[in-house]
Image (cartoon, rainbow over all chains, first blue to last red; front, side):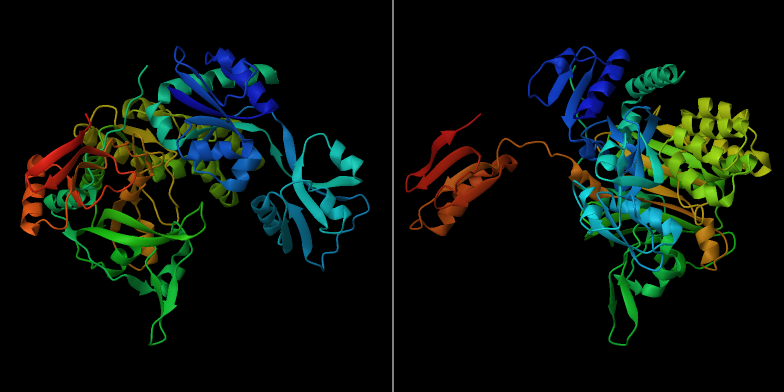
Length: 210
Length: 374
């Protein structure tokens, strides 16, 4: 039985469609209910819906054999997993944003509000810039408006939220997309179905890109 | 479809591993709980976790609780030409747990071969890695890589030094798309990128993987590494269960310390590698020692990560007694009930939530059975 952790929400649903096409269907998952675990013994597959930021933990700890997690989560938590495939979906970028009239003063320590402390630290360390991290869990965009921070480091998809709050992207740190990850041990012991799935998903992403 | 249940032989793993290493002529290496902090500062990147618990001795010397065993063994090794010092150990090390960000005491059982090592020494250490995994569980895989081959492929591609660490990290993640993106950024030629990606995506049984490597441009040092890998694996496969030995270049250790064959062992049911090892001649050189070294460590604490099978009962029998009864009578009744290795708890009253197979009461006329469960 292949255990697959999917991120709850639109991304998870899009990715499930790809898994279904790859021969790992589980029709009960499309039923409108509050169940979190779905199984199809015939295809030898079991899906879990989990919080997107928790997928990597389920996979690292082996509760799920494989899963789909955003590159942002992989960079932030550095789980000890295999990153087998870029699924080219859930595409966005990790960016530095600030108020439209922001002017960086390099003599001052930069105050950075973010959910992604490690990514922000590493980015500014690579620039040799000293920063003060302000760890927030949501509505990051408010921080520079209220003077809590100079800039924010956050995920930017379309940029609409930034624009509506008079913020703009000043730097892109890294491009983000959904990745297929696998538990390192379970990859060895359930190699055949995982390889079969990877081959089909790879083909689907190639077709999508052409 | 029924799920396979992982099988582990028993809970006496550490003692059986020590007995195994003893049978191969390895002698036990005992060390102090503390080392001078300086040893770890000089080799910080060799450590799995670079946080160390330190304290000052009355003499003013800064000491550390051991975060690692290998450094102490290498430090104390004595060079004798043509001789290989073979030691095993069971030690506690103190490292920061990534998830909780707190120090944890971790039990480590392992062995080291230090000195004039050759292909036989390498083969023997790999064989003992296989035997160690066999001692712990029934279904296992030993992934083996050769850093000389990985290094040769990167050399052939002309990968600049600044890009090596991130590319190696991607190889360790089997992240072929990440490898390709970094190589493009580094200006590596597309055919060379394809070779590195092939190294990442080719793994499995020796014959298939080595056939792919034969076709690749490896240079002189890479060819020598490939020949060594073939020689050692051919001998090892005769000693290991079919399919348990795999070549996998995602086993990456720090190339500032490790140079040759590196490996990691996995057991079915345990979500991370339970055994890790490799050849670390560069560490020897950094510590001013001649010769080479290879070894591995097993982490038996990882078995605790498994959900233990639920036991139906806490105890076989609860024997209730009256304080007025002679002690000898209570003891005799308990001994009789404990025949055939059954567990018996002697209590004045029934403890809450205790799950038992049989409930008995001892009174003046003897043992009376009050309840019995299948």
